[in-house]
Length: 109
View 1 (cartoon, rainbow, N blue to C red):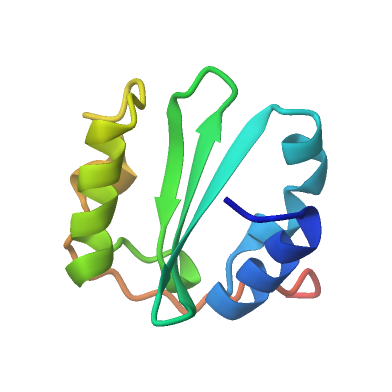
View 2 (cartoon, rainbow, N blue to C red):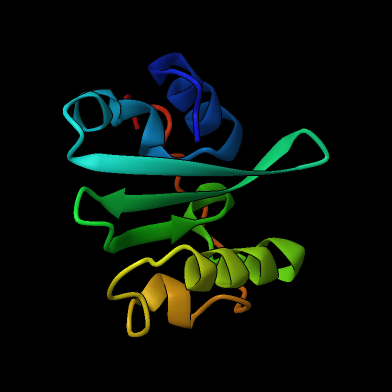
């Protein structure tokens, strides 16, 4: 998990996703954010609701997780007691390549 809300910004910038804007949701405990790193680089981000239900699993630029990151996410979700993940599109499409060009970390887009 990010150590503080500033790390959410770093994750968002590095992965080019909007998690940097989740400060209020995390502080109010409406969301739980779990970051994934490989070789000191962010490779995935998981958002859970305060009820421990899966909201999203994202790779860089909101892609699906692939490779080792995808395998690790599947294992972690199953072992962690996450609720209602089986039919979630981000989970069911792990391993599929989906290219996106949207840069969500920049609010001026």
